[in-house]
Length: 324
Image (cartoon, rainbow, N blue to C red; front, side):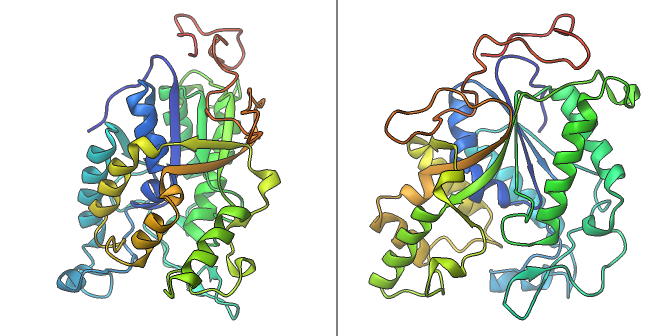
């Protein structure tokens, strides 16, 4: 289900596949829904190339019936219902931007496959996919945009492409002379990348060792590709009150996430902080007020309260609401 979010505070997230949004931002999304903000999710592919963790559903995988994408659409709908998000959309029409899959290099890091299938998201012209997002940005007019870093967190080609599309579309959407047929130009005030602080991952690694699980399957935090230095993390969103909603959304993505494994036992062991508190890096816009203890923002909209909406090329678009 899709509804317009052209009022109040507006958050838009760009993700590569169904389930990425819940893992990275589920608690944040649920918290802002409760707070009354508009939350829009844009998913770039339908995850057709994902692994199927449910043995009874192996037949829908890409090497068999190849209907996993349609199944994951249903999983995403259920997850969004759990989080309370009503505005969720795909970047393209069904089958237009297919999941690219991934391979591993000699260091066991995610990379693009040697052979790129035509029609995959990774193979799509960047301008084509960016223009789709430009239209959405100009329609929704978000105050905050969230996506991955330049490595797509861990190297998956679709995550990297989602980063590129979001970054390019952010610039194009604000250009007052670019493709006015795609809507009134709009400048998103703040852009964030998802982040995993090194200190948080260090606690995960040590707790995993203490519990004698293979949850992380690493000896050192240095073996985790998506860790960033704590100094780069600007923002910390406490969504622990929405943790049950995030857990329900994770269960909805049953083909991709095994909710009964050691990950969940581990989360309880470290106070569930790994699930309910989500971290970000501000990469565009001004840092708002920070918590005096952590030195980080505690609100993605920090500093935007009372600021005018930012229609590109004008001090304020006619009839545009005020942020906050």
